[in-house]
Length: 138
Image (tube, rainbow, N blue to C red):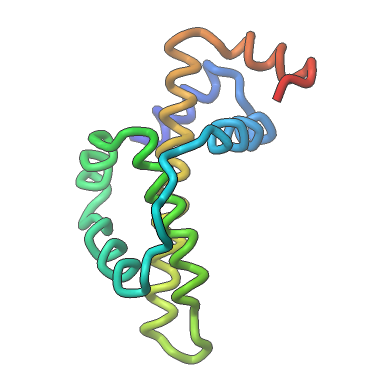
């Protein structure tokens, strides 16, 4: 049902795949609170474990409580974790950890993107966004 709802929002907003990419780029250029230091491998593993939901219903409920800035911080942390705790070829455990980072990074990015699209639709800003983008405002 969430996919259908999001598709309907995208259709109402009029944002196709290419506009979606632009929207993501614009929104995630907005500064989020800077992380004071890079996470350690232990922090990466603990946060990834703590942030992994047991179901899509649980994930939606938890994500709804997070601010847009927190979504960005979590996305950025998981991106860093991919780099500092990489997949070691042939090691199933490292592959599972790495994939958890990848999935969580994508999950938080998409949650922010959906929230931004809903904002654009709710405030009827799609036309203005598209006009300004066509004019080169980025």
